[in-house]
Length: 449
Figure 1 (tube, one colour):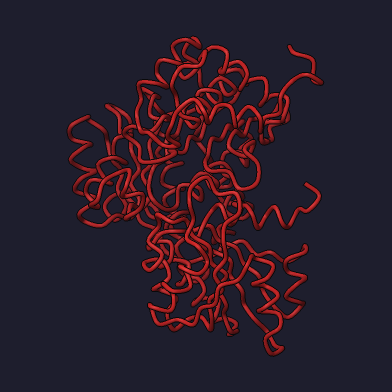
Figure 2 (figure 1 turned 120 degrees about the vertical axis):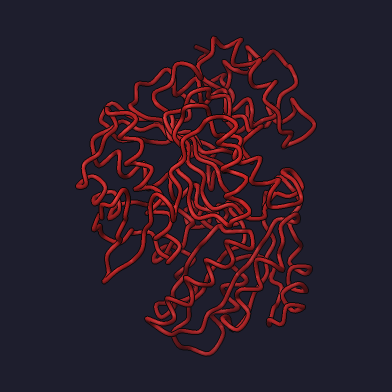
């Protein structure tokens, strides 16, 4: 091993790896398959894999499954993207004490240097080579399960090199990343349904009829056995409890700790996935107690996350609530607006949005559900984004065109200070529109890093 004083940082290595391909995203399996072969196929040496695709809800369902498994004493690896504050968050490794933690700096540098050396300068995207690095790290650390989240799409995503996952899960599919996946909902669904495998069970969350028909058609082609929301399982809230129904049986469970009505669907899908997984892989069978504990203890940053302490809430003062959500497409706008409406029913407060969005996103579609719900929108830039964001001026114009009061601000702190200067009284503030913005906000909450 290279002495630590002469070893590059992970940030430096990641910067070098980004230069190996002219595009940030170039969907293909050939490059990552080539590298994995040169590495000795670590993707074939993994614990049972749950492969998760979809437009919204992937992260939440991953978080639920992790919470269920850890409550049952299982050792869990997790792969997600993008990260919020540090790249290390993407690769979570099961520890010898049973607790999963983000990969540490030395381990990340080591695995990145190894894949960089084996790749030997060949053309490959940063996501592809870092996915190969993650598989190498996972293969070398014992675990009972790997929760593997698709990066983009499914069919040609670098994670789709897993030939025989233990289970696949497809969360609700809606319009997003049309420039990469296709201009219609059917084409996007076809890309995401590409994770289905012959003989592998697939759990399918709520879908439109158009999307479901595409998924079912793909399942018939590859011979995948589907468990479908509304046909094979259902979930709903009843008298302050989460009820999950499957195969004529009811599970009476606590409501999930994650905030929002949409989390009923995410939690219900995760429960169904855990049940199907246990039937197919007996070593991963869970008792109801583990599911109950997981629902109560689950955590997932930047998904209607309440920021109750730290420098940003301090700007607003004690009477204000500050929330953070990384949702960034029209479907996410719908569920976030619904969540705000539910909060308002319980505790009415004037609502203000602080919004930043990436330039390729449907800003009007995201903002439209908030019409009539929020007092004002303050638009901000997104520092450090890899691709061009909407300017705050352009985003404010879009919001005003949608009939909402909007003002552009120089940054998040400026926006919060503007809201704090409004007439005193309780306020509810939500920062939203981008995971990149959410990561920036969380970094502001940790000024020492």
